Length: 229
Image (cartoon, one colour):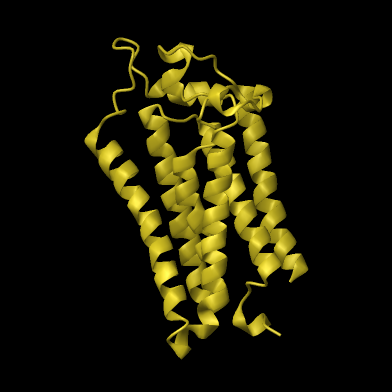
């Protein structure tokens, strides 16, 4: 179990760390956001686009809430339906992982300096651009309220479904992992395109969500039924 845990934690986090370093050193944050900025109008044209704002932002948030609500309802039902009793720990794990991931990102946003692209000077705003290397922790009133990405955290918090599915039926786990990762990446891209976040903001959210899901799964003993003792 421990070796499996280390592989699932160390390799993805190492890849993310290397990617973040490359993003910082090569200026990929700005280079990518530049592609979605219209210098002629001084705006991000997709900022208020109906598909990006209503579907990929507003509606996507309800997907995350829907998963959490379903988990809560099943958890409550487990106290009345004997067939769900064995699901109880897995459901508690899923809710805790999602809550800790999203809550941690929300807390960091309230106390760190990076601002959203549409608020920085390069794109017509007034805030300086803080990269990850020079961010600072500040009182709530001085925060840029944009690092890491809260929207991406919502999507990537569903990575916990991988461990939840793996604990119940291992064949479903890879599908859950692929879909949740794709969902998080889609939300991340939509926020970059809208000028709401830089690439690194989303990568940090991915790192936080995966680390939380993996450590909590190990701590709570969320593993395939055949490994249960």
